Image (cartoon, rainbow, N blue to C red; front, top):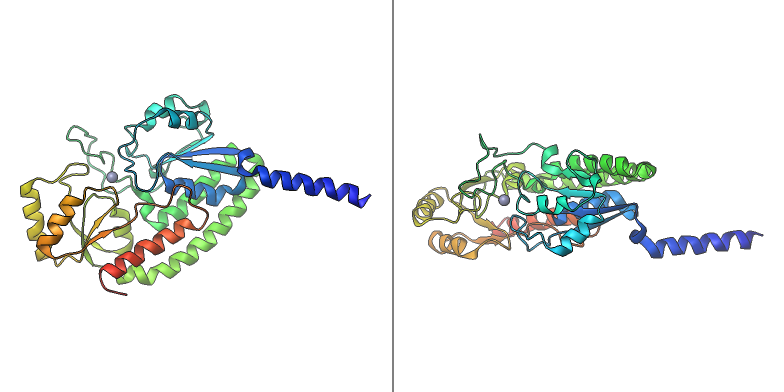
Length: 304
Ligand SMILES: [Zn+2]
């Protein structure tokens, strides 16, 4: 009797495990890999998380290609940075998506709408090609934002998939505990970066800089998305020398020339930092990402 009962149960469990996320309750569509990674952290096996972009792609400039349309059509949750980062492609994709992922629905999560956005201009003006007309959208670079957004995401998942509510609450608890422990480990490393002057290519690192207390003395871009003019570069060289800048920060997809120009004249190293996690990043990858960025900075400025 016992045999007859146990075996089908085991077989069913194995079948379920093998089917895995293919039968997940929620199909997630993330604009950037960090949000796919966070969805995997909180969603576990109830959520699949597809990222529209990979770590070496500039999320400001993506084409709304047919394969992305096919993905968003099946999505029950869309997680993106918002604040205009994906304005060139996400609206087109959303038009093809279902009702549950439209603005105002639980399946539509723009993370910048749930944290404090910095560098907000007085009025929205894209006329000069400014890529940050609604403030800085790169909110994943402050670990405190990740902590609060994990909770926001957990609530949204519970709203979309109520029968998984306790599953999401459990996973949120686990993630929150490990993230807080990681933040405690990072705190002295961040403190050691306080007041270190840096120049950035694009205003990508603003939240990370605010968290660590580093000092951004200038940007290679004249404005977000606007390449530097000769006069801009010359003024930046002067201020870089004056401020004793320790590093020039760039993402893998920023144009290398302006940073090299400044580096060779000011004698300051260029530090390429990963913009985000891998597209298929497993749980744990977000914490490893901050470890990696901190290590690269420590190495570059000679603290390790
Ligand atoms: Zn940007």
